[in-house]
Amino acid sequence: MAERVLTRVHRLRERVDATL
Image (cartoon, rainbow, N blue to C red; front, top):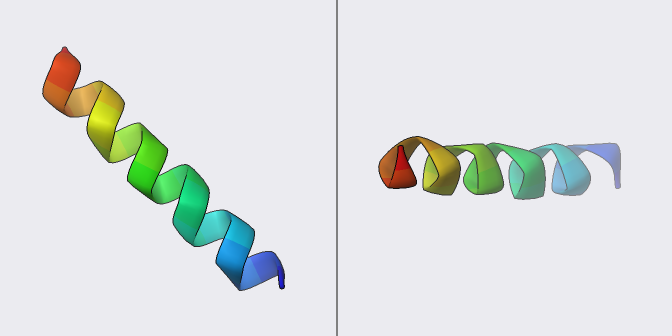
C-alpha cells in the first residue's frame, strides 16, 4: 500500500516538474 502512495506522489512530482 505504501508503495502505491509513493508511486502516486512520484507521478505528481513528475507532473509538477513538467509544469515548471
